[in-house]
Amino acid sequence: ARYKELSSVEREFLKKEDGRKIIENIISLPPKYRVPIVLRDIYGYSYKEIAKLLKQPLGTLKCNIFRGRRILRDIIFKEIK
Image (cartoon, rainbow, N blue to C red; front, side, top):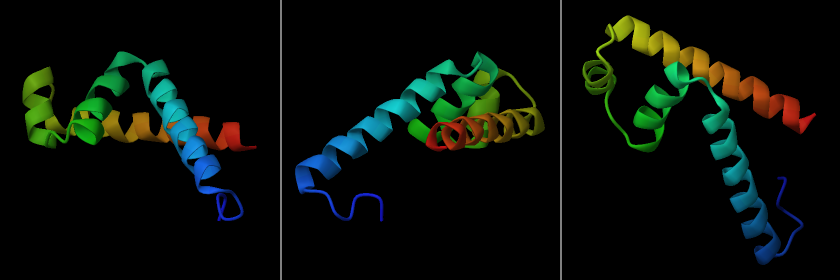
């Protein structure tokens, strides 16, 4: 809906800009949230693989990913307003 009335060039630019902002927001997260989110959402590692790599209990890892995603969501909603 946001890109509906724009030219294809304008739409592509805005999509890239949105992607850049998301990456900047991920980078701004504390490492305990950033690292597992990058491994899970960008590189596609399983929760078990990440827990083993980071030497964390699986429950702790899932909690940190959940909290990190929630922080990202809050940042993005704040930027939209």
